[in-house]
Amino acid sequence: MIPGSLLNKRLRQFVQLVDLYPTILDTFGLEPPLGTHGKSLVPLVLGGSGERVDRDVACYGRFGESVNVTDGEWTLFIWPPSQNTPLY
Image 1: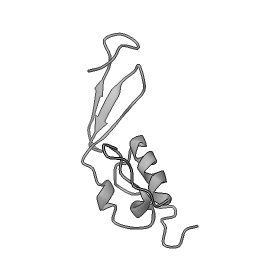
Image 2: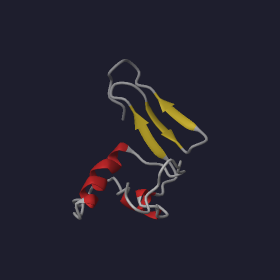
Image 3: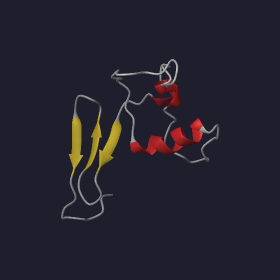
């Protein structure tokens, strides 16, 4: 266990898969390249406020299926017109 880290706690911040890459780089002391969309989760895991990760909404979905946006209370589901059709 990392001293000062969170253990068995649920946080209200939205995180996304895109945050994984900057988080891994941050653990090695590296900066993500310009244009990287994710945010490092290291400050959040270490018990910080998670200001760098704070989002109003989160996007998620599955390839060829729905794309979803949620604010934690409401979720918008957008389905392709037919299976495995790109969404724009």
